[in-house]
Length: 346
View 1: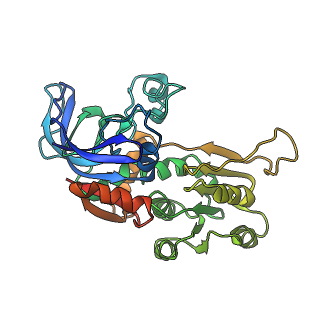
View 2: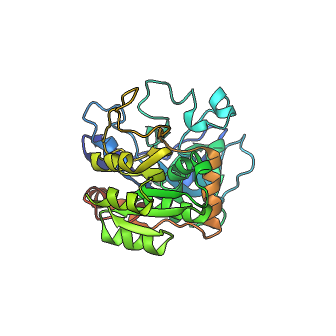
View 3: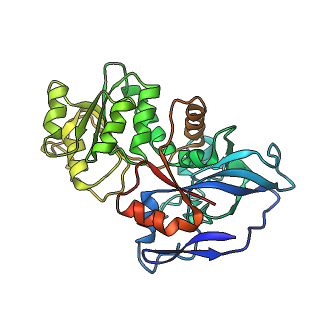
């Protein structure tokens, strides 16, 4: 079978690999779509000593069941399924508490990231993928191409939003920075599940136009004047919640500049921005601000986004690429030519 393989720094190739053999508790999934995101770009740019070299990429995967192992129940040939982003054990303390995105077994303290398809385990940018049956969720009649990005592009913002949902009252202001793969889904989730005022920012006019049509109450260019405008719009108090889906230094600075006292910031983007925290006065951070380095989401979060997609309340903006054009998809995403989410279609 064809498999998009990470071969060396900043280089992927399509290799021929055997169709996976499945264990009794696994399902062989015929891949219908595999999303491509900026974390894939980050992974292949981590140098020639990266332990992930040689692996098949792809952590946003949906498809149809081709074969089920002897111990598998509830899955039949042809069923549509979405693969969990984080391959949790299901039995540890964190999993049993519903925090399976922090599974102690697959995410030891010194790990690069939790075990995921394409990140420590064979990914879905291929014709087939073998998956433990308990890592699958049904997608019903959803198109696997459009469902695949739900595993990260929708799951990750849903989880970040769920961690601050108590702050998203009808009189709250939520600022979402960056309207790319994750950000354009966060906007739709906010509009579908909260009554808060949404201020959406990006540097791309096309993405701002999308936001205007999909639930943003105010769109602003993410530039040097954005902080002053947000503070003006909130009477000088600031935003209740700031979601940063970019994470570069200017967006980190913006988040810190506009969050209100007692508000919350979720840094989701992996752009390398930083801030200094001083335990005491003079830090520049308002009192009571809650900050979290958000990652992925839980199975409960995933079922929520699937339900919203099935109800037509959210939808991924998809750019389809044949699997054989994977290198072009990587190049287009790297150079900012993708609106929404690139999806490889075997």
